[in-house]
Image (cartoon, rainbow, N blue to C red; front, side):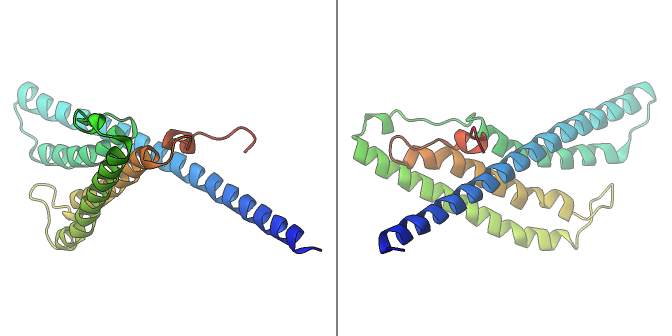
Length: 193
């Protein structure tokens, strides 16, 4: 076996391994996205039910249900935190590129890269900082439901981590050289996989 054929064999093995890793990453991303979608639909249904329950109790039966408002607030917290990642996935966050679009390609690329790094750093700081809130939430209980506040507080690191994932998937392809596949292509299965 020649040195050249060993190099070809080694690069072929690396390419197969990389394709396998990408296939697993695509599957994991699809599963995470599907899980987030299902959770958001369930949370929205729960929030609508809780609010309707409160309205019926208050105006039809003349009885205020003390815990339903608190539960609706907890559910809304989760919806907002997970929904931010969903909005990023669908590119529904507002971006003003009036200044950026007028720059030369090199300056535009540098500015977009700096913007990505600062935004990712900010989200990471929030994720890490939210863990101290979770440790506090293990001690404190909610007023009406007497649930540990770790339940609503956990929405921060989970939701922000999901937002960071979707932010990276939406932004990094814009920073890559022309001809590179977009993040949407990563989530879609390739023909023949």
